[in-house]
Every structure is written in C-alpha cells, then in structure tokens.
Image (cartoon, rainbow, N blue to C red; front, top):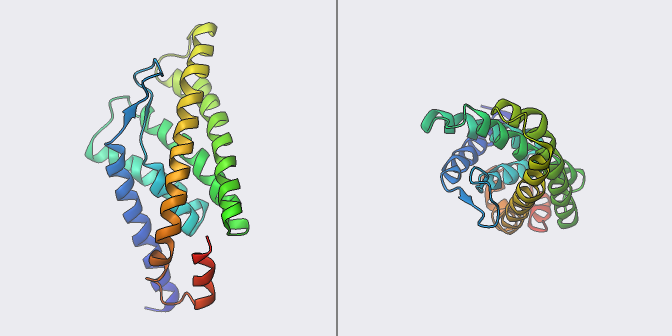
Length: 201
C-alpha cells in the first residue's frame, strides 16, 4: 500500500469514527425551556462533523452529516417519517460547509472564527427556508397560518438554530485546537512545517 493509499485509508477511518461519535451525541438531545415547541431540540452531533470538515474539508463534513443520519436510522429508526433526519442533515450542512470552506481558504484562528460566524448566519437562513418550503410541508404542517408561522420562526427556529450554532462552534474551536495535532500525527507524511501550522490553529 503506497503513501497516498495510507492517507486515504486514515482519512476514511477518521471520518467513520467521527460519524460514530456524532451518532452517540444524537442520543443526548435536549429541549430549550424558553422555546414553546417541544419537537425543536438541540444535539451536539454537529461538533464531530465540523471538526472533520476543518480537518479534511467541507465534503468530509457533508459525508459525516450524511452518515450520522443514516446510522441513526439504522440503530434507532425515525419517529418523524425521516423529516427529523432530513432537517438535521440540511441544518448541519448549512453550518459546517460555509465554516469549513472559509477556514480552508487560509487556515488560521481568524478564518476559523469567520467561518463559524458565516456558518451561523447560513444556518439561520437555511433553517427558515428549509422549514417553510420543505420540512413543514413534509410533516403535514405546510398550511400553518401566517401568524403561527411567524411565531414559529421568530421564537422557535431563530433562537434554536442560533444557540445550536454558537454551542457547536465554541466546543469545536476549543476541542479542535487541542486534538488536531494528535489526529494528524497519525499520518507520518505530515512534515514538521505542516505540524507547526496545525499547532497555530
């Protein structure tokens, strides 16, 4: 097995591991007391996805988001006729992809923070649009009266997705800085210069 194959195998193993961790985290979802919609819950399964996207690029983040939702279907099933898993995937990608894309333009603390800010903005916009045009209709709530829809968006989706993005971003920033070097040291083809760059994240 050549060096490139070793790198690809290591990458796949790490993506699979992060996906498995994300599935475990999906079991620990919780409601926000001040949000009056019981079905709107937060979990931290986007943390492994964002870490993987920072490490390997936006596509890896999308793969982790996809795998975790497929795996949770296998081990737990769906109580929402797949709507919950679709929502989790769409909203997760809305946060992870922009954040990783900005970060990979020039890896630094600044681009990581800017990327997560952009991801937070995107999760808010995409979350609203996806709910109005895809998720609510799929769940049989497409005819929600306008005033109820506005209430759902303003005191439900906006605070929920905003809080989720902040929690995921802060936890990822703290953890990724500490574990990135150990993750990449597994691959001996990373030279000392690259490792110094990783330590400066």
